[in-house]
Image 1 (tube, rainbow, N blue to C red):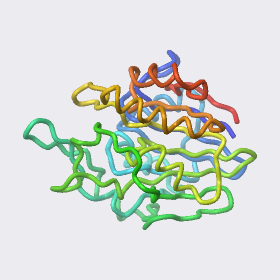
Image 2: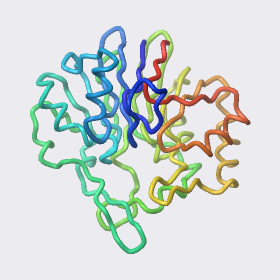
Image 3: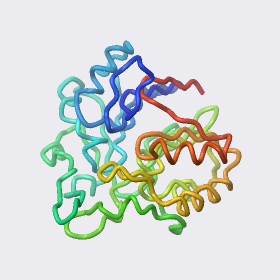
Length: 264
């Protein structure tokens, strides 16, 4: 399995960074994208990495925020065959609240009716290799960085968030932002313990530019200590400060920046 970060907040210097996320993944059976980022950054960086996005057969959008699905319309213009999987509620209205104002971070709802879109309600086994699942374990860690995010007029409960379990020689979980909590997500995997977990921990608020309090980082650190056999590659909404804090305590956590490639 080969995983390339095509969109992420920090670049390794070979490509353009952007606030968002997109991973290109080659498996035995698939060429897939996990998220597509906010804008044309995906296409610029794919070209630099000699990745032909027209050959992608599967797209997973982790949740209904524009920094993960904003480039979907353009992707569908260049790729007419890939199936795109989203939770049905990903096309609901989503907002970020700044002081007393709310700003939309929603996906383009007109894309909901594309013939390539597959709307999912809960968990779905796509095939022997790919399994989509939502967080169902008890909520053991709720990040304060979620507090300004809304679904319509109410605080977001992230029903629209899904995760991808890839079965190969070693199982890999892709979590996107992990709004539901990375520990909760891992504990929602049925009867399995993955070798890798890749995605954000959402302990950094990009609007206020603040990391959650150290007490909450410590709480997360203690819970991550239950997963010593999992190799974590975090990114995006974890933020530099939180990553440095967690890295000091856990040798099995690394940062996956834009342009980096991981061979598993």
